[in-house]
Image 1 (cartoon, one colour):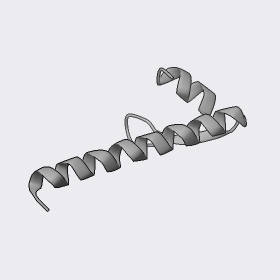
Image 2 (cartoon, rainbow, N blue to C red):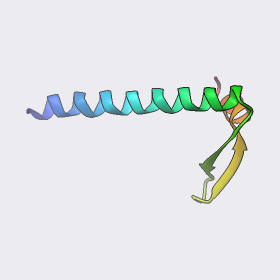
Image 3 (spheres, rainbow, N blue to C red):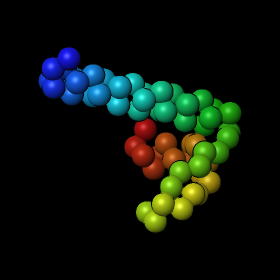
Image 4 (cartoon, rainbow, N blue to C red):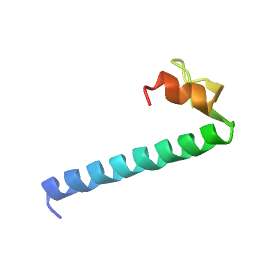
Length: 58
C-alpha cells in the first residue's frame, strides 16, 4: 500500500468514526440521555447530548 493510499484510508476511517459518533449523539439526544466529553484540561464532563449538539452547531 502506497503512502497516498494509506492517507486516504486513514481519512476515510476518521470520517466514518465522526459520522458514527454524530449518529450516537443524535440518538442519545432523542432519548434525553447524557454523554461524557473531556474539557479543555482533559477532565471528564457529563453533558446532555442535546446541549452538546447545539453547542457543536448541529
